[in-house]
Image (cartoon, rainbow, N blue to C red; front, side):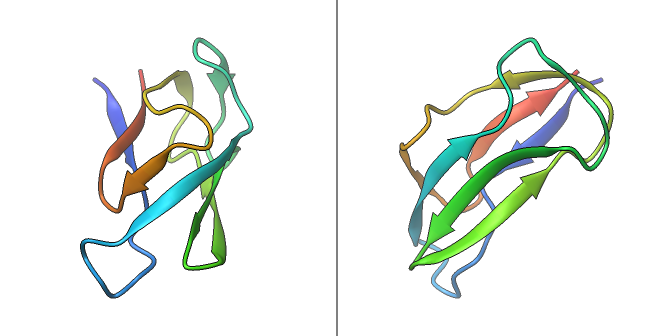
Length: 77
């Protein structure tokens, strides 16, 4: 079963967009729970996104892409 990773809700504005600043992993890479996957930025606030579980990650959004909060950015199988 896949676990989805969404762009975090940092801003109170539900339509706010942010930037997926950096991926720390690559598609197909084995990740461990709490391993850092990405750094995202919204309104000059940065946040690290950890893996919620162990598994193989698939990235769905390019680095430096503008992304709405709550949008699927990766999954772990």
